[in-house]
Structures are given as C-alpha cells and as structure tokens.
Amino acid sequence: MRHTFRSRILVLAALLFGGMSTTSWSDDQKPQSAISPENGVIEIFNGKELLDCYTWLKSTKLEDPKHVFSVSDGLLIISGDGLGAVITNKEYRDYHTILEFRWGERTWGNRVKKTRDSGLLVHSVGPNGAYNGIWMTSIEAQIIEGGMGDFILVAGNDATGKAIPLSITCETAHDPNGQVLWRKGNPRETFDMSNRKRINWYGRDPAWKDEIDFRGKIDPDSPVGEWNRMDVICDGGHIQVYMNGVMVNEAFDSYPTAGRLQLQTEFAEIHVRKWELWPINKGPQPAVPFTP
Image (cartoon, rainbow, N blue to C red; front, side, top):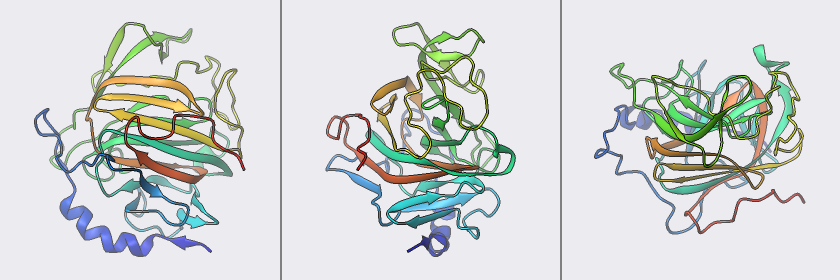
C-alpha cells in the first residue's frame, strides 16, 4: 500500500514556519535543542513510515502533489521528480547515522542522461530553501554515481539575508585535473564561503563524467539496483563518511556542529530501506549492507 505525506506536511506547516531557527550561530550559541541519541537508536525511517519528518520541494514548498515522497512495500520511495528533501523536524548532534539505499531506474529533467544524484545533508540550519529555494544551509555527504561521499558546502542566508557561516577542514591533495580530494594524513585546508569547493572522496576517478551509469575504477558503491550503506559519523565538528564499510572522506572543525538532516531529491529515483541515528561508538560498525 502506498501512502503520501501531504496531510502530515499541512499539519506541520505552521509549526515549522513559526519555530524554525533562521539565525547563524556563534560558538557559544549552538542550538540547545539539538538531540544526541544517547539512550539508543532513533529511527527516521522504520520500513513502515517516515518518522518525525516533513518534506520540502522547490516548486510546491510543503506540499507534494506529485507524490515525490511515498512509502511502499517497506521502502521510502523518492521518485526524484523535483528538487527538495525529506527533512527531520528535530536538530541532532553527536550521532552515527546509517542510510541504506539503492538507485531506482527513473531520472528526470535536465539529468535524464546524467549521473544519478542525491545527497545526505547534515548540520542543516536556517530557513527552508535557503540554497536557491531548494535546501537548507548544510554540509553535504554526496550520493552520486562516481562521487559517493564527496563533501559539498550548501550555502544559504538567514531570514535577514545574511550569509550563514559554513566551513569544514580536510586533509587534502589534488588530482591531475586540479580537483581537491581527501587524502588522510596530508596537510589540512579549511573551506568556507570564500573558497567553497567540493572535497572529493579519496578515490574519485579523474576521468569522472557526468553521464548515467558512470562507474570509476575503484568506486565502493554497488551497481544500480543493489543496496548500499552510507554511514556518516558526526562527533562535534568531526565528520567521517563511509560507503559500504570503506571510509571515503573525513572533515574536522565543521561549522555548524549540529542541525537537521536532509535527504535530497535531485532528479533521480532512490529507494531507502533504513535510516537511523545511533549513539557514537554504540551502533553497528560501518559495513557492506546485508542482502537477503
């Protein structure tokens, strides 16, 4: 049976617009409401329903007339027909999030023949749609063919139009094309709004092309239709990203250090069977996902 989230969205609308944080933070003004899963796992999707979340689309805001987001046969189905995200109502800090997903077949718009694209955005703050009317200000762990775990700074302004501070520090190298990539043990570089760049996962193929079904020589993600597991561990300003048990990227001194989580819709169909938050060092270790 298929369920949509429209009714839940309408109920939450007043609360979200009335109570959402829209200001940037100083170090001594980090949100006290942010939750850490200290007493056990917090399920965001449990195979039956999407828990304590709302959806946002650039075109229709809090409404979802095309049913971009739905639940069917134990899966959260994101059709990809639009730009936006599933967003947690609550802010979280200091957690290990596990996302198990696979690609669907459908692609849309100007990305019909381009790499399948989504992303898990952590430490999301500020108003809905702060980035081009689509996403909240956040740090993205990229989900894209050939680029699983790339970091992207998703910029945005607060309600007054002031840029929300956003930065990460990574150990970096450069590929033959001059692209920045993570290289553990190398000197650290800090990236903010003055030099905002993508920090690629350590093995991103220098021959990467934005074309559907692209696979690099050592990509750790599974082929289309097979399950993947992304683990993102956020411990203060320290962020580690794993894909199918392989650590692919790492950042230090992130800012912000807490916020909502967003799971993107970005013109590619994606299916989710598990999305949960664990206390740091108390959950399952990053691993290849179980396939029944």
